Image 1 (cartoon, rainbow, N blue to C red):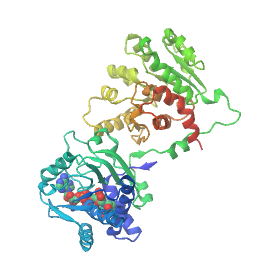
Image 2 (image 1 turned 30 degrees about the horizontal axis):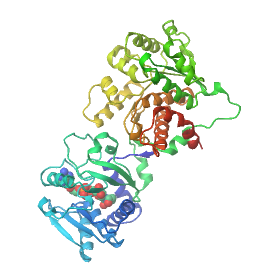
Image 3 (image 1 turned 180 degrees about the vertical axis):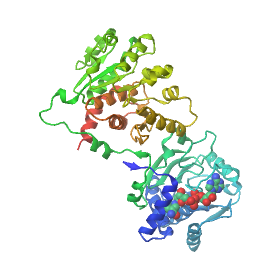
Length: 498
Ligand SMILES: NC(=O)C1=CN([C@@H]2O[C@H](COP(=O)(O)OP(=O)(O)OC[C@H]3O[C@@H](n4cnc5c(N)ncnc54)[C@H](O)[C@@H]3O)[C@@H](O)[C@H]2O)[C@@H](O)CC1
């Protein structure tokens, strides 16, 4: 797990590292620039590629100057540097690196307006204009520059962060950035990289360490953490000798209606494949033949019994409700009855839509429940948001207020615990953008909950496993089905267990 820190904290990590390692800020810049180049040469292997380095006058520009020099030393012989001279201020580190460059022969162009970039027509652009020092959105000459560079449609690789892109905080829809194909970012990804709005500024990012003190960074009390395989390996317990199906819990999934029985079956399939000792599916009777034919291991429970004071529904180790349930009167009755059990629930899809419609019902959601909304369901529950930053802050406040876990689904899903802490899930890919994927995630959460994992752990492990299964399948496939993702979970689990 990595602590994601803000830029102010990152700057103090710079200062701490410089002091602790007894190095100068110029040496740190050299290390950062060399780290950038190490990744860059993997991306751009042809040394004869024309490379234009656009350098602002701050430390991001200082990096750019050092990068140009190091690339040249490595045999990239068509590197040219453009000094973006839109402001008078320049940092010490920038000046030192400019002098180092002037010591060697180097094609340098001073840019006072975008007209000075007329020779820029081909090759790769390294964007070192403005980095993490950004303090307002682009305007004036910087805005013109960004629009001009974007219009060239060249392969742009940004240093640390694309010019104009704030590392954290709300991203306005009308913001303009220099759009990068790739960002090679220092030590930690920026929090804003994980929001869909970042697609306007970058396609991909790589994080490269630059020797900052990890101990210092991890000491910050940041609400944002990035999950990794190690966390999930630490969490998932291997199955022990002499255990039996009773050891691994009994999950119940209440889902499905005539037109969407598949959603219920997919959730049950994922639950089964994620290792629950027993899985029971409560669907309309019309789905029974399909269930028995596809998942003979899964049991059936008639849900008309639910309205009769529990009807045995209270004896399960975990209950999930929602996939393909529908939002009609019968579904409302089912959800109302389940909420009366006062047991933590995993609430998804149509059950969330019902909660969005009936506030009184929403208030009855028991503590320790897991809500798994995608963007539309989320805004239906909590109001329309015009940015993902705001949406995430609402999710944090709501998770605390309701003492629930919220799984806010996204390419990078946010798992928000009852204390407002956010785990960002790094697995998953666009090949998984297909119907049924959410039903599978719900099934995995139900399975892990039934096996005794606390709600926040079940949710974060489920998201990781779900995405990893999809990632492995996507290596050889353009699109992966929800059934395939569910079916691959046992292998992914086996691989992660220590
Ligand atoms: N210790 C260091 O020296 C290190 C610095 N690093 C680099 O330093 C960068 C941060 O450098 P700086 O803090 O100097 O800042 P930048 O180089 O990002 O920005 C330079 C200046 O631009 C001005 N500015 C901000 N937003 C603007 C806007 N919208 N329009 C016009 N001007 C604007 C600011 O006043 C700032 O001083 C990082 O992104 C990274 O590339 C890395 O080398 C890591 C270590």
